[in-house]
Length: 497
Ligand code: UTP
Image 1: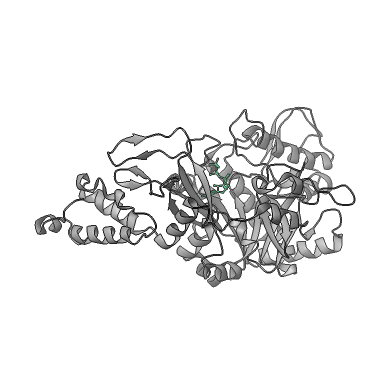
Image 2: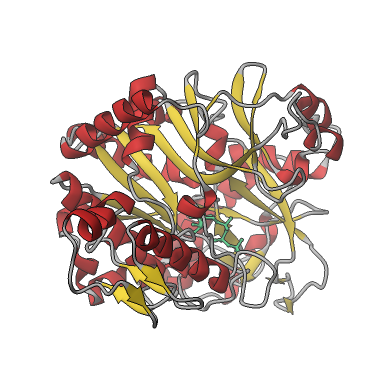
């Protein structure tokens, strides 16, 4: 290990922390990680430039060993691990209490729609869009939000969400701030993209970016933190559940309270069919006094690869498809329908006060461990590319907030109106750019056809939210206020803007 630097070497660092101090602080911080010795991180310290030492030192000092040690311990020793017995839990799971499409009376829905509209008009809602993921399955080399998805317009995922939000602002006559969570690889290009495109039409006061945290990846056999380069740790974003910590760290919970915002509408960048700030979901949440509400779709078959929204021991929670044993998945009710029917689509409403209360409890969101192949630099400085998964990555999931809430609400929506994620590259069987574009066009075709316009087979249609924000606005335009600029039969791809 390197010797401390001489006085003259220290002087060159100016006002920044002296290198001797930095070295001893870093070394003692590493020693505080009690479970596994992590001093290998300093193997290349002697060869680093001053700037690299500063940067690397800060990275190491930023590691929370209290949390990391616990995860490493659990990752290494199955005996110490607090294992969830998913089989037992899944067999106790019941259907969630839900507002279902078939049994919700129009009176309840009307009340919810009015309450949602009131809250939106009064500026009590902001939208959170999480866009910090690495999007590895899609294989796009820029942030996923910059991927073109409009079936006719080619608008990007960012544009689709922002346009829908601008449509909501116009409909409710208010300003609805958008908070975009970025990650280490998406933060800079996302900010640059918005700056280059005049914030996509959002006022500067209605747009905030905040970057999520990261967690070190560690060797699954030894627990040693992996190095990405000789002067940096292999870090990965801490999951969409990192949103809680990132909101707090960036002062956005206090900002929301000061601005009178009571609810966050939460959506993910990869689903362009989300109805930004859906007034019905917000209204139902408020009328029920819920702390966390979630939209679900009926699963198409028992073992579909979606998170299962269920009730266990009186609390709503999500069981991932990979944790749901088949005997539990295939259970049916007396009418033959699936007992665990509710599929998660990652559209939620959170009470700001509830999130603030959760920040006080470090266990509100546990870490999940995923075994992945992570390239690293070893102590000799060699770059190693593993063929098999060699590392544990740690992520938090936002839906783990559900069981932390005392009052939750589950609301069913039609998949065709709310869910068309872009997860996989073209050519994959599901959730591709093509399936998503088709779903958008199908929904907009339905809106037009409900209003008496015929759309020829195979034709793609797309409606800009400023032209028609939802089915009823489109109907208004085409039935009561028959627009002569819209033909009765649409014969070629058309973008209504
Ligand atoms: P996914 O779980 O689909 O991950 O994220 P991903 O990173 O987008 O894609 P893959 O798995 O690498 O292919 C669902 C949503 O959560 C966000 C993503 O940006 C996406 O909107 N997310 C995910 C984050 O914001 N941060 C994360 O650390 C992980």
